[in-house]
Image (tube, rainbow, N blue to C red):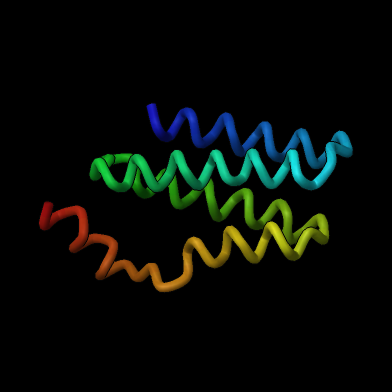
Length: 93
């Protein structure tokens, strides 16, 4: 469920940006996406890889369209994530 919700929020954020929604609205959708990711990770969701891919995809979307603020925010979410640490975190649970 978390991966589906994250995907839907990603599409919603992209559409809001494309249709000229104010930045606060788009940022609120990004907040909801990150909250969804954090909650799923706290529950050790098996969808963690898909959740990170969704964050990376949305960050790339904003970067290409020149919104460096939202792109950077999503990049910061992925900073420090290493394959070893990421894998150990979920396998050890």
